[in-house]
Image 1: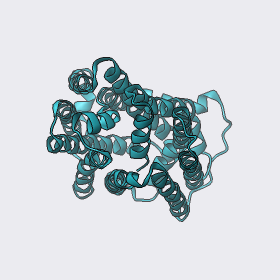
Image 2: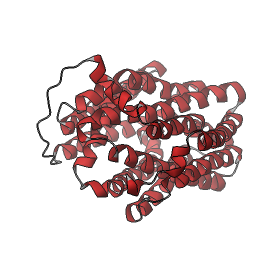
Image 3: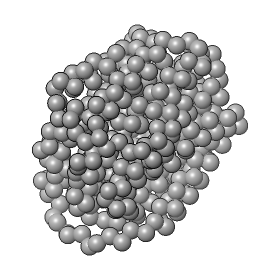
Length: 375
């Protein structure tokens, strides 16, 4: 809901494709600066309380967007500043939340648990954009007020989660401990190949930042159409996550991963060239399903291969790769759209994703062979 409201309001204020890209950039900067710190804290403190505090901060920033909209003083810079605060909160939230999930289920069920948690999130990502687009007709402030309240509900629910965590050693905070998650991943060629594939594939395929332009200028729809476009990738992801929760990937995970990345690239190209709303929605559904497939495989492998005492820091590096690809991908798409137009930007991104998959297929033979069942 928030993404739809911010995107539509900002594009209405400025009419600039570059500003839509800046939404990703201002979230990326605090991600780079704070995520490793967040991972270190997640391995030293109660991970539940970290997530709760972050939801409260996100609620406050969203409430400020509502007040600024109602008061008529919210500017482009104000929107970007509040989005940056939300990005900073998520830099602490993501590693703590990711590291918490494997503690709540038996080890062999981690892939199914990740798929189940992801399916719950995808349900929200389907309902959220559709509701955001519909409620935007009542004003952006209405959307922001509801979102701020939902952040507080989320904080209360996370606080109720029971995690009988053992006492963690009080290691000193040093440069080595801060970057130990980076060292862990870079010491394992399979993990660095997996995360770098996602980084570059999603970086080039970040078409979703341009959805407000496609909705208004290419497909000729209003906020309701933008809500449908935002919800379509989540619909595909939900279907895939429900499937994976029942039939998790265990064997041939490597070939399946590459197949998902290739489908992601092709779907991006189809969406970029489409001028029909139904075809665009179908392409985004395929895009979301293929992306979710690679997300669950990647996340499962990282969590299975990481000891619990390191999960916060390793999850922070994982989150850094993921957020960097998503947010820089949005900025890259906005920049290319400003220079060459949205269609060229999206098509080039899709072709680039396909090229990256081909290069990694031969550059990282480990990725072709790994199996989650053997991890």
